[in-house]
Image (tube, rainbow over all chains, first blue to last red; front, side, top):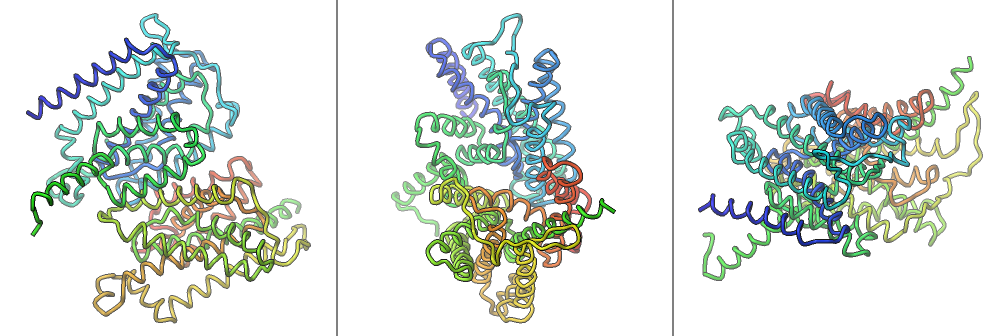
Length: 321
Length: 289
C-alpha cells in the first residue's frame, strides 16, 4: 500500500516534468521552472540537515556560492570543461563542510548554526573583495553554457530537462537515504540525541554526513545556477539568501522531501506573480518563519492537515482524556 | 616612532566600536542565561533604538529625552517579542527557537524599512563635534561618550544583578530554573524581564553609535552578528566575557582594517568567531558552560 503510493508520486512527478517539457513553449516559464529546480536542490539538502539532522545552517548560501563561483571561474577564466568544474565545486564544498562540520558537530546545540553563519559571511566578503578572482561586487560574466553529449544546453528548455532530471534523481536519492538504515539513524538523532547514542548511533558522524550531503547539493545547485544565468554576482549569495532557503524549508515542512519542492516552488513563484512582493519580501519571509514555527512547527502543509484532522477528531466526539 | 601614531588612532576607534559590540554581546548573554536561547533579533533592537531615538529627537529636540524614550520604546518591543513570539511556542527545541528569532529579526528589519524608508538619518553628537588631540590621534567627544556610558551601563548592570532582589532572582533562574521556581521566583517573569533588559541594552548601544554612523534600517544585522561574535569570543553568558569579547573584537577589527585591508574589516569578527568555536568553544573567560 505504502509502496504503491510512493510509486504513484514518482510516476506523477516524471509525467508532470515530461508533459511540461512537451507542452510549454514559453522561454520565461522554463526559466522560472529552472529556478524552482535549482532552489529545490538547495532546499532538499537543507531539509535533510534541518528536518532529519536537527541542525541548522545559517550560511547555506555560501556552499551555493562556492559551487557557482568554482564553476564560473574555472570555465570563464580558465576554460576548464564545465563538468570538471562542477566536480571541482563539489569537492571544494565538501571539503569546506567537512572542515566546519568536524569541530562544530562534536558539540551539541547551536554550534553548527554559529559556525555556518560565520562561514557564510566570510565567503560573501571574499566574493566581494577578491576582485582579481571573482570580479568583485560587479560580478563574473561570460560563463559558458553546459553541453551534454555534444548538445549545447544553451536554451532554458534544454536546461530544463537536465535540471529536472537531476532534481528527480536527488529527490529519489534523498527519499532513499531517509528510508535507509542511515536515514533511520538520522531521524532518531532529531528526536533524541541521547537515545540515538544509547542505541549505538554515532551521532556526530551522522550529523557530519548529512551536513556534507547538504553542502554537496548546494554546490551542485550553484554550478547549475552559474551555467543557467551565464553571470553571477555576490549579491545572490548573501545572508538573506541563506534565510530565504531556511524559509523555504520551514514553509514546505521540515523532514518532508516533497515539502521541499513545494516550499521552493511557492517562494520562487510568489515574487514573480506579485510585484508588490518585492517591497514586502523581507517582512513576508520573517512572518512566515515566525508564524509557521510558532503555530505549525511541522510546516504549512502538514500543519494544516494536522489542524483539519484535529477538527474532524473533535467533531466525531473524540477527546484526549 | 610614526608607526605608533596611527596605532593609537586605531586603538581609540577600536575601543569605541568594541564598547558597542560589548553592549550588544551582553544582551545576547542575558537572554542566553535565563533561557539558553540565542536571540538573533538582538541586532535589530540596536537599529530600533537608533531610529526611534532619532524620531523622538525630531519631535522633542532633547537628547536625554530621545535617549530615554528610545531605550524605553525598544525595551517594550523586547517584552512584546517574548510574549508574542517565544512564550506560545509549543515545541521549544533549539532549532525552532533559532528559526523564530531569526524570523523576528527579519520581520523587524522589514517593518523598520517600511516605517523609516531606506535613507540614513543623523543624530547630533551628545556634546558637539569639536575634536581634540591626544598625541597624533584625534578623538571626538562622541568617542568618549560611548566609552563612558558603556562603563556606566555595565556597572549598573553588574549592580542590578548583584545587589537588587530582582537581579538576584534572575541569576538564580539562570543557574537552575527549577530550583528557582521552588523557592518562589516567578521564572516566567524573569525570562520576560531578561528580554526587556537585553532590548534596552541593545537600544542604548544603537543610540550611542548613531551620531558616529547614522541610523539606517539595515544597520542592525551586521552589528547584531558582530555582537554575537563578541559574546562567543568572550564566553556566552558571562558579563566580563561579553565586555572583553567586545573590546577584543573592536580593536582587532580596527587594527586589521588599518594595517591589512579595510575591505576585509567585516570578516575579522567571523574569523575570530570560527577560531574561538574550534579552539575554545567556551570562550576566552568561559568555564563550565
